[in-house]
Image (cartoon, rainbow, N blue to C red):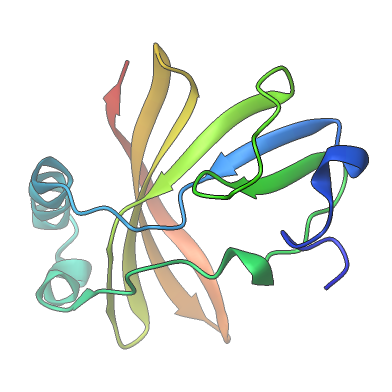
Length: 137
């Protein structure tokens, strides 16, 4: 697949973004999700429907521009001089036309944030309804 993770990224990218292909489960994030839906009653039923994907299929992501997505569990060593960040996704909650997504974005070991997004399918496309930072470091 052109531009996918199977491509030789070392020759085609200016900057690399490492993505964990394993979804994490974090009790603190689950608690933050529960607190967030208390103020967003439209999403209250969604938390009763966890969606356990297990692993992300990163090969399906097309790389464009000067950034390349690389798996942090890959066999190739990552050129740390070109690494600009890391994304880790947590398990999602999905019910009918609503979903709650959470992820952690870090630019170094000492700088990052965890986000929770409330999204709704409108006209066949997912649209963000609310985004909240639940942790910074």
